[in-house]
Amino acid sequence: MAFSTTASERADPATGIGLPLTAELRRVSWGAILSGVVVALAVQILLAMLGAGIGMGVLDPAQPGDNPAAMSMGIGAAAWWALSGIIASLIGGWVAARLAGNPSHQVGLLHGLATWATTTLLVLYFLGSTAGAIVGGAFNVAGQALSGVGSAASSAVSSVAGQVGNPLQAIQDEVSAAANPNDPQAPARQMADAMRRVLTGEGDAVEQGRQTAVDILVRQGVPQDQAQQRVQGWEQQYNDAVTQAEQQARAAADATASSVSTAAFYGFIALLLGAIAGAIGGRAGTPALQVATTGVSRSRTH
Image (cartoon, rainbow, N blue to C red):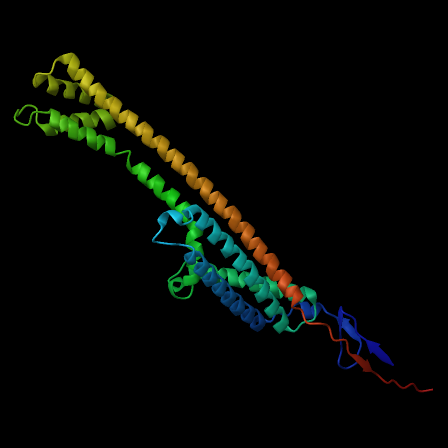
């Protein structure tokens, strides 16, 4: 009597009868996955270096005007980085599934997916650690291009936010110059302190500081109405500068949020395509099923 196995069964060595492949689905070959990860990393490094070589080759330091724009270079680097990851995931998944040696397409697909996931985690580790300076140097070329937009926008927020305090310093310098340092009743320090209370104080402190500043100017020979106008002008100058700085800070914050959102979205798409490529590579690398037929002889007693 002869029995043959099917694609969803494996032969029991004792009876030759096909058994369910459930046990095989629970078996994972980490050696095969590790091999796939190593191959994927090597392929991605090679492609990243190739992309860097092509990108640097189109630059001409002697002719700055003929070089591509920074934005175009960043987009090109990001696109090449994503394509390199997809190709590396496809090859790494194929290698892992082939070395796993399991004839199940489902097992091969899962091995390819596990290879992609492990490779992605290692790449992220290389980019975010000291090891990245040694092992992930090629990865950083494209990684910095992806993060450049968000970093530039974040720097803009910090720069604009720092300008909020500058008007006060400029006005204080003007106030100090307006005070008469030779008059002991109205030193520059008192004038500056009074205007600081006007510009940054609250409630009664503002009114008291305003009146003190006006009195100091009046004692220096400035008419009452001109002294009030000068103090009001300093207040308006400060308020206008703060309002402008706040508007610029909000605009920079919006640009940062938009840049981060865009980078995250395209990063998600690239990783998703990499996962799909790893799964496809794993399925394609699944070895062919070898169907074995085992003859079993049985005797009957009459």
